[in-house]
Length: 126
Image 1 (cartoon, rainbow, N blue to C red):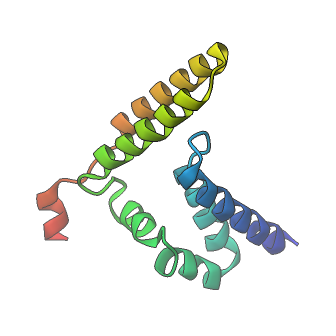
Image 2: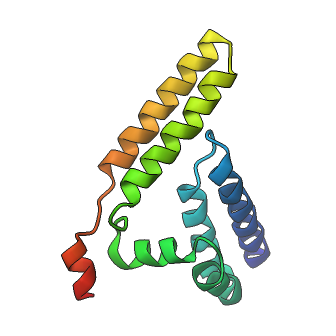
């Protein structure tokens, strides 16, 4: 039963992570990390798929190895956050929703800014 629940949660997390790629209000990374955790404890096959066969695999492997973002990723992620929230801010006409969106964007950018980035020289050595 425990294994089945973890597999279900893992696939739910993968689905939410995939939605998070296109929806500005849904974070991708926490769901990917949750899926990796669930699959590591329940299904070696699904864990392998997530790390080596899915779109997200290279990022998860990089995070597991270095506990840091690849060079240039922080800027690209920040640009995606700004662009997706800018589209939302243009489409939404309700002032209080715009304020909430701005607060969320600020929070996400602050979190992104705090994440470590691996040094290019360090990455070449490994």
